[in-house]
Amino acid sequence: MCIAVFLWQSHPLYPFLLLLNRDEFYSRPTQPLAWWPGDRILGGRDGQAGGTWLASSRDGRVAFITNFRETEEHPNPKSRGELPSCFLESNKSPWEFAVELLKEADQYNGFNLILVDICSRTMVYVSNRPKKDNPSFSMVTPGIHVLTNASLDAAWPKGERLRHNFKELIDQYGESEFPIKEMVEKLMTNKIRDEESLLPGIHPPLREYPLSSIFVEADFPWGRYGTRSSSAFFVKSSGEASFYEKYLDDVDGKWKEKMMTYQINGA
Image 1 (cartoon, rainbow, N blue to C red):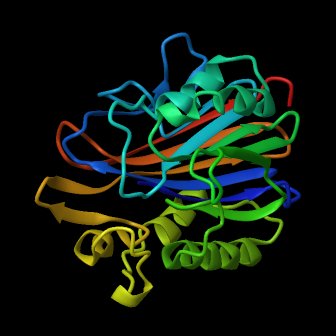
Image 2 (image 1 turned 180 degrees about the vertical axis):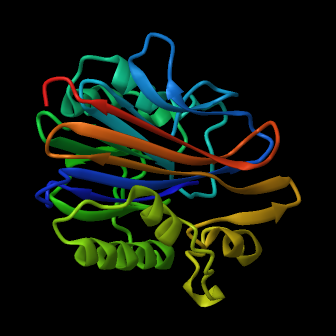
């Protein structure tokens, strides 16, 4: 399902700073953080459908996605994971890509998609499950934002916990450099779960309760499910991008980590 917290255009050293947990079935094959063939896209990759939950490019573009929790699903949907990679492979601006996406948004199950262009300081939020009937997109304002499995900045308890703890760390470090790995460990490994009265109530409590923590561990009748990776993507005002991923390895079931750094072209 995934959860993300990010800081956008409101810090003197970091114009963009993102932390994201990817939740998925343990049986689903996954490729860890790496440059994809062609050396244009950097990110983890879904070994089943070929898409991604978070990826970036050398020209300062970033995209990430979360599922929208709902009871009904499309009978024959397109893979939501293809949306971030399609944006990064295109030459469209976030706004242009969002306009085109809305024409076929009904072919996907519910999603929240964030499209970023660091160089033009543009960030767009796209969802095919807005409060009204029509898919929508909007510019994201500067500041701290949280994305769970509802609309951007929806006041889900797990999201509010993450927002509060994230802001505390931002205030603690001030204008100094942030320790990427330490922030991931402090913020994205939180296993506190909600009381039943605080659950969204979209699915039965037995299903929602294990999903109510920032770091998820769940044993469902249909398979083991949980947080498969915790990622951090930091961009400095100098144009240096750092992409960190702590991931559960498919082969030996152990937690491993990768850090990739590159200079954004044109930043």
